[in-house]
Length: 236
Image 1: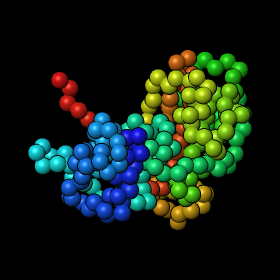
Image 2: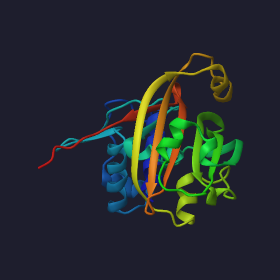
Image 3: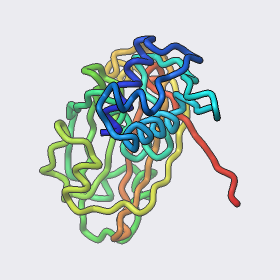
Image 4: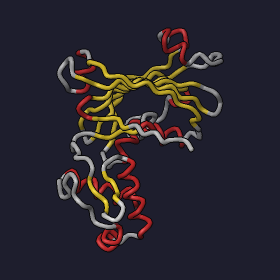
């Protein structure tokens, strides 16, 4: 419920119903308008605060702190493992188109990636999957994944990866993420429907499950479709 309410308020910010610096309705007013509980309204405000879109000022109310590009998505560090989840959480329609998939022995994987997934895998093969992730029917992300061969028959076009992992009973314990700006080459530019040489964000991900198995993902996200937000808290 609170995600739905947060989505509605976000849409109102996009539509300029509430402009930059403008006061938002109070929690009580939201409860009356949308017939939700006070807890739901509070959680919706917390979610929008986490996204960096609003700010509460003591004794004054809650204000819009950032104008939104309606064609972009805000990613937080916790979203970098499951990029499509970052879109879905913000009410963006997500689907994928598979460009190719195949099973590879470790010695057929590039040396740099093979070193990343160099745990004791024995004769286990890896699924190499390339796809385009669409947001609201536009190509936003080129995604390359190396996963366990157990995922060969999973539906990567209709489902996002975090749901597929959950259905398979896989628990991700650790994730390492490296993010860097790049300029896209022609092949990727064509996939993403942007001019060659456009700015993009490269997100490399290595994730480890409870069995100690490593998997790898490389995503290239259109520069006009995302921004990353990082927050740190002082330790007491």
